[in-house]
Structures are given as structure tokens and as C-alpha cells.
Length: 80
Image (cartoon, rainbow, N blue to C red; front, side, top):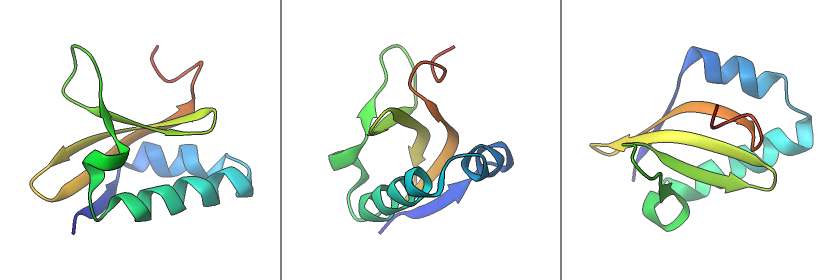
């Protein structure tokens, strides 16, 4: 099982989201702890992964049984 770790900036981003969206993101992240590669996709030309949750994206680095969440944002803003 992988351990979830959040960047400080990510916690602030999550706190600004509506409760329903935040709960969906947390539920998907909890589900991905067993096998993150079932849920996350590798980003092209980058070392990190994306998780799609409706119109929101979670960007994370997955290494050594750890999922380090770096960005949570709306899909139109996340890749800038």
C-alpha cells in the first residue's frame, strides 16, 4: 500500500475547492493507495502522473511506495 503525502501548496488548493469536489478527490486518492497505476496516467515528457476527477486534475509524483501530491486544480489551469 502506498502512502499519501501532500505538498503545503496542495493543501491550500484543496481547501479552496467546494466540499463535494474535495470529497471526490480524497475518495479517489484513497482508492489509488492500493494500486496507483490503475488510476494515475503518466504525463508526456514529464516524470509525474495525473489523476482525473471530473473537471479537476491531481498531479503527483509516485516513487518508493509514496504518492506525493503536488498540484490539485481545474483542468484548464493545471498544465500552465
